[in-house]
Amino acid sequence: MKAMMLKSFGGPESFELRDVPKPVPQAGQVLVRVYATSINPLDYQVRRGDYPDLVPLPAITGHDVSGVVEAVGPGVTTFKPGDEVWYTPQIFEGAGSYAEYHVAAESIVGKKPPELSHLEAASLTLVGGTVWEALVVRAALRVGESILVHGGAGGVGHVAIQVAKAMGARVFTTVREANADFARSLGADVIVDYEKEDYVDAILRETADHGVDVVFDTIGGNTLSRSPDVLAQLGRVVSIVDIAQPQNLVQAWGKNASYHFVFTRQNRGKLDELSALIARGQLRPHVGAVYSLADIPLAHARLESPNNGLRGKIAIAVEPSLIP
Ligand SMILES: NC(=O)c1ccc[n+]([C@@H]2O[C@H](COP(=O)([O-])OP(=O)(O)OC[C@H]3O[C@@H](n4cnc5c(N)ncnc54)[C@H](OP(=O)(O)O)[C@@H]3O)[C@@H](O)[C@H]2O)c1
Image: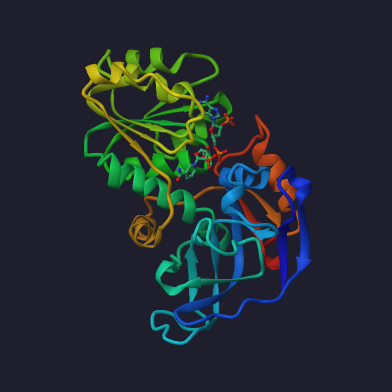
């Protein structure tokens, strides 16, 4: 099978498309023909060497699968050949999804929502599981509450806006002006152009100095350290971003705030929950660009570059017929 191998840690040129043996499913595993995968910031963080001890080289990386079961190992009862499935491979354990085939434990694999194409489904597994963990499990967002979603046009943010609306929240989001209509179309109630206005001023103005109940930090840096400035009393902050520097959150004490840090690993149950929102028409991932398996280095370079013109996700059409 063809696989995009990471030969060494570094830039996008560190990848090489290679022919490698097709994996064989062992007991409790399914062999999946990968139709689509997607690109996440985690992928370029791994590629450039942020987690060298967790990724033995050469490696097949990639964290989303949408595809079709080709064969099952002994003892598999939930799936049979021909079933459409989606999942996030075990992060930092075994091969990833940048390949024509992938094997996974039956326990992490979910039934793909029939409403989504493979490109859409592959664009949701990692970010959707992250958003569910952040908003439902950790922040426990309630009907009528307010939430600030930072980076509302991004892979995570555009899903968070939709899930927060489905949960009955008033949604504030930060995007650049070019993405304001996109964020509005996803259901955001208040758009803050982060390039034109300081988001703290905007949130305090829009909430009459009350602040928001939940801050969802997808950016890092001052979005975390300034979160107490935009929080209502008893507010919650969920951050999904690696914190490079120590942060002074002393003002959070005055807000009786709770902080949650999320690193998503297992998503199957959360994907089943998201499927219900998809079936009701309340959630649909946005595929902003599609690249082939061979063009993964170009897709990495694009996602990594600032002002890349992207909305939503970059999907990878592993099955050539899905390339638009
Ligand atoms: N912990 C976890 O489990 C987990 C899971 C998924 C993702 N993450 C992390 O979450 C972060 C976001 O991931 P993603 O997939 O959403 O990335 P992404 O698709 O690249 O989106 C990032 C978004 O942030 C916007 N942005 C940049 N600077 C901003 C600012 N100052 N204010 C508001 N928006 C800004 C970008 O828009 P512009 O076009 O305006 O620049 C872009 O739309 C990454 O660091 C990723 O590693 C963590």
